[in-house]
Length: 188
Image (cartoon, rainbow, N blue to C red; front, side, top):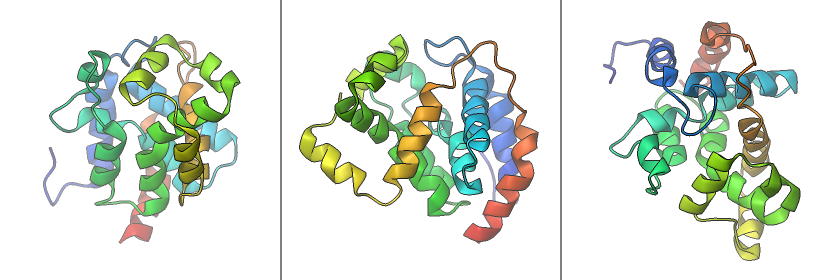
């Protein structure tokens, strides 16, 4: 997908412009619009730069690997959170990649501990929840919430579910270039 001399931010911008322009698996927005909305919500909440970046990049794993997001909607877990975190770790610190890695687990956690959260899921999110393992058990939830970056992943997951508004007009990817460049320097 990219070579060693390619600017990682340009690689990401290309993903948002091309692969991200596709429909977002049963939702009324594109994948890019969804991720841009999540980043806008994180920014509006005053989240630190790394968490804004995680919100912006949380679903890039849908564009990577042999199992696609389309496969997820057909019942095969594409493990996009893991794929995205591993891929992003070449450029970004754990404060970005770990909330990405944990955002699906955070959905499972929230569904286990907050019945109101489960009721707020879109029909597509309800379906993927079943493919991704369903709500956590009490023991799994206890283990999850004590992980480093679990609280950030829970915040990200709340923005994730709220980022499916077809009428929203979030800032474009380019508005995050400086923020992402600053985080690249931290990872180097």
